[in-house]
Each structure stands twice: as C-alpha cells, then as structure tokens.
Image (cartoon, rainbow, N blue to C red; front, top):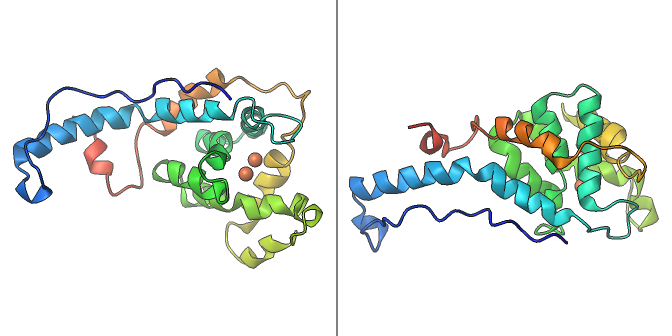
Length: 204
Ligand SMILES: [Fe+2]
Ligand SMILES: [Fe+2]
C-alpha cells in the first residue's frame, strides 16, 4: 500500500476566540470561513491521496484496486462518458479502505456535492448491481439488484457495472494513468452544485 502524501494543510496560525459556539462572533466566523475556503480548495488533493491507498491492494483480484479504478474510468472515458461520470468511475471504489462493509456509500458521499442525482445513484448502488456477476459464487443472491427494479436509474447502474466496472479486471488493458484524470477531478470538484455548505466554499 502506498504512503499517503500529506494532503492536509493546516492553514494560518490565527484562531477563533470562542470556547463554545454560543460565544462565537462575526470576527471568529469570518476567520473560520476563509480557512474553510482554502481547505475546500484542497479537497481534490486529499481525494487523490486517498485513492492512492488502493495501490498494491489486490485482495485476490487479478489487478489491484487502483488499477481497477483507473481501468473503470478509462473504459468509461473511451466510451464517451462526460467528466462527472468518469470521475465517478474513478472514485467508485475509494471507500474500500474505510467502508469495507459499505464502500459504495463512501464514494457516493464524496461525489454527491458535484454530480447529478443519477451519477450519485449509480455510485451509491453499484455494489448490489456488481453482485450480479459474483454473488452466486459467495453464497449470496445475484439478483439482489432486483429490489431496485422500477427505479429510474436501474438501467444506468446496470450499464455502468456491465460495461465498465465488472469489465475492469484485465491486467493487459492499457489504462490511462492517474495523472490523466487529475485535471478532470479538479474541474468536477471545483464547484459544489448540491451541498448545504456550498455558500461557504464560494470564491471570495
Ligand atoms: Fe465497488
Ligand atoms: Fe469496482
């Protein structure tokens, strides 16, 4: 597993004066807001650093989890998907490290502020749809995705798994490197379109 680059920048040395939020002042919150904007701008760096944790993590699969992520994103990109979709493909398994029992939800939460409801839904539910290709080998129900039948995004999620996710375990496939996707990731994460904190991150 790769070392994590230091993705956290600690900002200025100024501090708010309150000891409880009930004592907070405009001055305190102006300071915190400006720190938040700087912190938010570095989100893509923290995400990239975390994605690199998947490097060398095979878990018995023919390719490691970073290569699987790059291959999924490359296949989506070469198939003409837009940037938000490709970024979702790149990050769809980023939650394997901390969300070992619910990894799709971790990735879905990370991309949620920046993508459409459909792309978010695909990411959030890809685990159940991917299971169509292997749950029957591990004592589970491969048709578990049927519980979502009738959902407007059912076919889109099935398509993501069929075309890109389940197909992205080929050690001989020539994927684009992580650097190829970096500018895309930065563009997609440059502006939240769906977040209760979006106002805080707006440019000064
Ligand atoms: Fe997954
Ligand atoms: Fe995957």
